[in-house]
Every structure is written in structure tokens, then in C-alpha cells.
Image 1 (cartoon, rainbow, N blue to C red):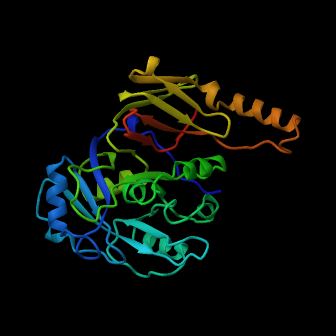
Image 2 (tube, rainbow, N blue to C red):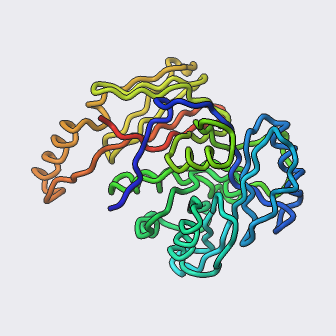
Amino acid sequence: MPSLSTVNPFLVDGNWYSGSVHNHTTASDGKNTVAELAEWYQGHGIDFIVITDHNVVADVSEASNPDITVIPGAEIAVCWDAAFGAEILCLGIEKVKRQGIHPQDVINDVLDQGGLPFLSHPHLSGVYSGLIMGLEGLMGIEIYNLFGVNAGNRGKATVHMDDLMAVGKILWGLATDDRHAIDAMKPQAWIEVKAKSNDRESILMAVKKGLYYSTTGVKIHDISITDTYVRVRCSEAQHVTFSTLPWLSAKVDADNQGLMTEAVVELNAIGSSQTIESFNQQLIEKGMQSTPKEIRPHVRIEVDDGQGRFAWSNPLPLL
């Protein structure tokens, strides 16, 4: 099954830029103009935003603040009978070619423009993992959508990500505000991108390569993967989860309900080639599997500060 090629953003040169990539303005059903959103986000330490109005690409030229990069995009409604009101979040496009058609056709339209197609709020839209597996060229999915979290707590989709990893389909994740109005004290969900500079081309290229992590306020300072262990350094956290394949993931908890800034797991515990081979053999011997599962394992890291804030890495390959 086709998959994206993953690069550890902590191993490449560049600077970290904070970005909000799902926003609506008065060009569709938002309450604020492009300029107002840009000014607000810049005042809260965000380096770039993507304007993703419904089924239309807003004119971003009205945002004149030189200290924030504003990238055009759109959120396009699709016709997908197996889902329940699904949309494709499109970064870096200049035109909505078609809407109300199968998501694969919208994805193709976006790719033809050099844009980046992501699936919006799959849990909110009733898009189960099997549907996502049939799409080609999809860049990723929203694993945290604040609008969905506030709408019946259907804004999280990390299970979808793990389902995809289990069959070898590697996609990126996004954390987003899905902002329709400036109605909060500060941004709630965004991505931290490792890019050469804060311009449209560099940011989109970095996102395309998966050179970022998603967050609602927790920082990941480093992820190190060797042939014996995986180590995460982060801001203060209570729990760090290392999600790989079914039965082989691990969670590290801070001692005595305290806080930690580093978590380490042995590679053999979460998915070395030897571990997977041994586990496959056990399942075959128990009659629970007839053939071995041949998948290059990846690890998806989730950091939880115990106060309702998280950070999520993209899936990274284990050596």
C-alpha cells in the first residue's frame, strides 16, 4: 500500500515555526476577515496561518502584517455516501476546481495544483479507517480538531492513525483550531514546523515532508531513534505513549504522579524486527494468524502533560 516517506524533523536543519492551518473567515462562515485573523494570530506568537474557507479560496493579499505568513487554501465538501459530511482540508491551493464529488477527485484536483490534501475531522464526519485506506495521494488527517472536540467530543482521530499504521499506510497528522471566530484567549491547537524560512514555499515543502509535530501546548524538544531505544525530550509531562503496532506499543508514566521531561523505551519493547518476527510466530502457533505480517514498523509519539494538553509526532520509522 502506498505510503509517505517519513523524515525525523529533529534531524534536519532549519528553524521551528508555529502554524495554524485550519481557519475560516468572512469569505465563508467565519466572523473575522483575513487581516483580522492574521493580526490576532501574530499577536499570539503564531508565525504562519492557512486560510481554509468552505469551498472557496479567500483573497489573502489583504493581510499586510509582514511578521506573519498567510497561505491560501480551502476546506472542500465532498460527496461520500459511506461517510457523514466529509471535507478535504487543502493547503496551498489557488482555486477550488470542484466540490460535492468523491474525495479522490478532490484530492487529485489539489495535487494537480501542488497543494496538500488532508482529511478534516474524520471522527466528526463519520469517516472510519477503512474508508481512508482506499484514498490515494492523501497527505494526512486531522488527529485533533478543536471544533470537533467541542462538538460532542468527536475531534480526535489518533485511533484512525494507529489503524492506518497497522496496515502500513503512513500519513501525517494535524492539530487545528478549525477557527471560525476570534473567541478564545489564545490559539488552542497548531503545528510546529521545521523549515528553512517562514515563507509559503518553505513551509508547504516542510509540511509535505512531515517535518513537524502537532500540539495543543506541549513542546517536543527532541526525538532520538537508535537501534536499541527511542528517547523523547519534552516539556513537563505525566505520560508519554510510544504507539507502534497492535500489542507492541508502550506508555511511560512519570514517577508518583509527578512530571518528567524525558522518556525512553527499549526498541525491543515496541517493535524491533526481531520482536515483530517473534510476535508473528507466536500468533501463527496459536492459530490467530496464518501468515506473518510484513510491515516496516513506525512509532507515533504522544506526550500528555496531565492537564489536558498534548503533543503528537508524525509516524517515524524504527531502525
